[in-house]
Amino acid sequence: MKLNRKLIVSAIAAATASLGGLASSANATELEVTHWWTSGGEAAAVKVFADAFNAGGDTWKDGAIAGSGGTARPVIISRIIGGDPMGATQLNHGRQAEELVEEGLMLDLTELAEKEGWKDLVRPSSLLDACTLDGKVYCVPVNIHSFQWMWTSLDAYKKAGVDAPADWNEFVASAPKLREAGITPLAVGAQTWQTNGMFGVIRMGLGGIDLFRKTDVERDPEAIRGETMASIFKAFGEARSLDDENNSIQNWNDATSQVINGTHGAQIMGDWAQGEFQVAGQTAGVEYDCLPGLGIAPALDTGGDAFYFPVQDDPEKTAAQLRMASMMISKPVQVDFNLKKGSLPVRGDVDLAAANECMKKGLEILKDPANIVPGGDQLFSQDTLGQLEDLLAEFWTNPDMTPEDAHDAWATLYEEAD
Image (cartoon, rainbow, N blue to C red; front, side):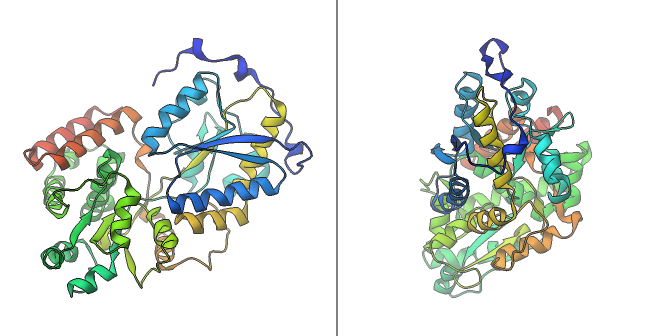
C-alpha cells in the first residue's frame, strides 16, 4: 500500500515523553490495543498482556478484530493513516509496517530498547532487526512463531487401530486406514494464508533448509525451477486428496478443533494451535502429538508477532505506550504470555521449566542457529506474499491445475518478486 502524505494527520509531530516515566503509573492512561487474537487460546494469551498492563495502573482497552491478520491489517492501517490511531497494534514484524514507519507514523522505541538492552536479550537477533529501520527500533517483538508444525490426534489413531505417525511419509501411508475408520486424514481451513503456510511446511519438511535458503534467500533460479521443487509440488498435489471433499471449514482454530475432537487425523498449522489444545484440556503426548518439520527436517521459521505504537499527540499516551512496550518484553510477562500462546519467548534469559513437550521440542531446535530461517514477512513484500497465497489457494481448490502448472507459476512469481 502506497501511503498518501495528504492523509497523514498532524499527529505525526507528537512529542516524545521522557523514559523516566516508565516505572510510574501516577498518570494512568487508557490505551486501545488492536489485534486479531480471538480464538480461545489467543484470548487467554492476550489476557496476560492486559492484566499486566492494568496491574501497573494503566488501562488496556481491547480492540480485537475478528478474523485473520489479512482481515485486520487493512483496518489497522486505514485507521492510522486516516487520523484515528490506536494506542498500540499487533502486526507481524517485518515489512508490513515499513511504509508507516517511513512516513513517521510509528513511535520510535530506540531509547527504550537501548536502556533495557533489547539487543542483548532478543534472540534470534533477526527478530529485533525486523523491527529496525535505519538503525532505529519501531516495534517490540513478543514471541517466536513458526508454521513448521504438524499436529496429530492420538485419539484418532487409536480409533483407527494404527500407530500415530512419526513423520509425513508415515502420515500419508496411514491415510487409507484413517478413511476406513471414518476419519478425514487432514484438517484444513480454507483461508489462503493457511494453504500458503501448509505448502511452506511441506516444502521445508521435504526439501530441507538448504533448499529453502537457495530459493527464498538466494533466489537461485536452478533451485526454484529444479527437480526437488517439482517433487514438492507433486507431494502438495497428493496432499489435496487427504482433505475432506466437502470441507466447509474456514478458520484455522475450527480445523484445530477437528483434530482435538478426533474427527481428523492431523493439521499442518503454526505453533499457535497449541494454545487451542491447552484450552481444551489436552496434554502433549497423551491426546495429541506434534511433529516439527513434519518429523523429517526440524526447523523453525522465526516469524511472529510484534507490537507497534502509532504516534500520538498526547505526551501521557506516549509515556503509557513506552510502559506497555517495556511490560511486553519483561521476563515474567514473556514467560506467562508464551506459555498461553504456544509460542516461544523472544528473550533468551527466561526460565521455561513449565514448558510442555512440544514447546521443549521447539526450544531444542532453536538452540542451533542452523535450524533457524527467516519468516516470509521478512523476505517478501506484502504484494508478492498475496500473489503467492492466491496461487497456492487456487491450486488447492482446483484439481484441474496440475503440479507442473502450479510450479511454473510459483517460480515466475519468485523470479519477479520485489
